[in-house]
Length: 180
Image (cartoon, rainbow, N blue to C red; front, side, top):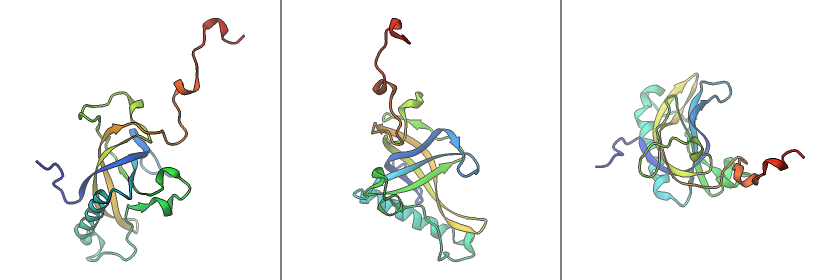
């Protein structure tokens, strides 16, 4: 059975960046939300086309929110990393979009088992997210947003944001050697 039955919902294989899946985060003083910046290689044309199709479907479904027509200045979530983040190596040759939710996503491993150790899922690892695209009209801003569903971690990757593991920074120390 196809689990992807809603035309505006897409399962997106991606690299996670700016990941907030354990605690909601507030951006610019806004409501705290769970969020991720999903980085998708431009070479993954199947996923990119599915995202674009879902955005188009969300536009059509949201015309009533925008007074019966699609606005010319409509904001859409899919962005080009080479243009919008030219100095960030992680976004080179990729598209990206930000997805968020007020509800905590379920975070699972490759066998769809809950991940309980929060250090296992971080900005830089790879996986899939479920995303539902929808139209909005809020305070004069109109566009299509990406609603974050659930997160599945599939493999580790180099951590983004300069974070390193303690084991990579420290060696073992005998008690007698401490602060001599």
